[in-house]
Each structure stands twice: as C-alpha cells, then as structure tokens.
Image 1 (cartoon, one colour):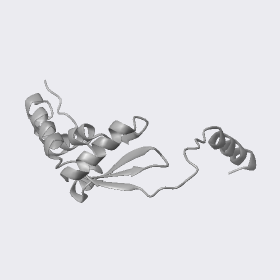
Image 2 (image 1 turned 90 degrees about the vertical axis):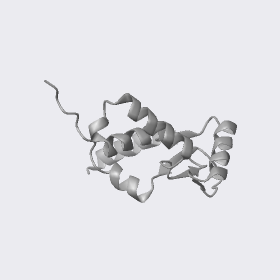
Image 3 (image 1 turned 120 degrees about the horizontal axis):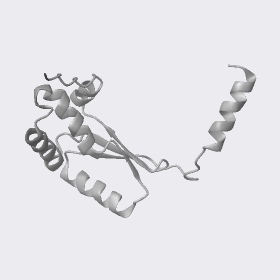
Length: 128
C-alpha cells in the first residue's frame, strides 16, 4: 500500500469512528434455547432500544429452512410452520452475545447450524 493510500484509508476510518463507551464491560452470553436467558434477552432489548441485533432469529431460521428443505422453498405453509416452531421453542436460536461497547447482540450459531450457514443456499429450480 502506498503512503498516500494508507493515509487516505486512515482518514476514512477516523471519519467513521464511533466512540461508544469509555469503559469496557464483559460480554453477556444468552443461550437461546434456555427460557431464563430468553427472558433476560427480551428484557435487555426492551430496556435498551439502542441495541442493534445482528441476524434476528426469523432471518436465521428462514435461511435454515431453505437449506434443510430445498424442495419446499416455495411452500409458504411449510416455511411458516418451520419459522413459528423455531421462534417459539428457541431451537434455532443458538447462543446470543451482547457486546455492550458495540451496543450489539450477535448470534453465534449452534455447530450444526454454523456448518449449514456456510454453504450456499440452494438455487430455485426453473419452471417451464
């Protein structure tokens, strides 16, 4: 990288720097399938509307539905049933970590879901 390019990159990063907190606080871990953790996570989100959520459960479950059911991608009823089950029982939630200094909650998927999410989504078949 040239000196000019490095200076430009540094300037761009500094212009977008967001100072979030003067103090560091340990992350909080929530197990999505554990009821008490679901309650605590719900309370945190209710109390702190400034917290961002990366990959809400519905988005994650929707991707998993397509991965696990490539033959039912267009089946609205099957998709809805899968999403409702994932949301209500927490089975697709994985582990959520709240990073206070970033004001963000990030999902760390269960190992099987992580493996699935790293593969491309199945492509819809063309219909004639």
